[in-house]
Length: 114
Length: 113
Image (cartoon, rainbow over all chains, first blue to last red; front, side):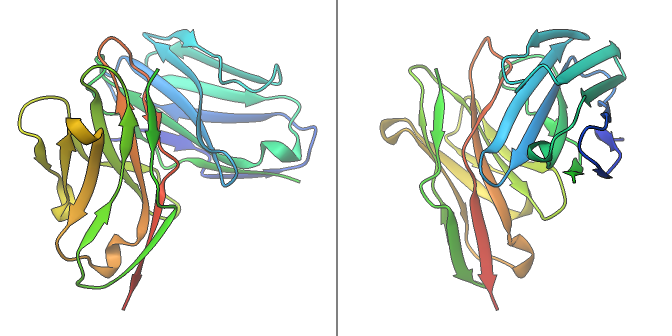
């Protein structure tokens, strides 16, 4: 079975540019999560969706960050404009419904803002 | 609200030695508990989970964990580590009626040859 697929794996861009990260969850999963991982702050939940609807975006750091899920098989996380402090590894995860269901993670996008 | 503490930021063990990684949680009811492993450049992979039943759970790669309600702990163990076990390990807690997981800060495991 295909796991969670993220693209691109690496992104290097200059500050001020728009960055779009993409995620394809596991087919049949009801929930999709976006995380950010840094050395300083560890793993942070940014936003999560249930059946394509955003449920909790309290972790989104600023208005420069936005996320969408236009259908059950695709989600994007956009940063506009990007800043050097946005440099991090961004993970997408998906799960079935239920608090006892594990989240399945993609391999992440390593983002570097110069 | 739930919380998770992994007291050890970094642990070094010799290959072939036994391993125990500590995880303490805070939650009033029975939690859902998970251990994940992250190898360099990769995402988090589920090792094992506990939500009910036998308090000793077996996972992949020879790992096991024991839920101890009296100590609010869910420590991860392996009887004999291999060099390929070098990675970052995360404990996470969830609860009934909620979909979010709360992750610990992680423990980095180094294996000495």
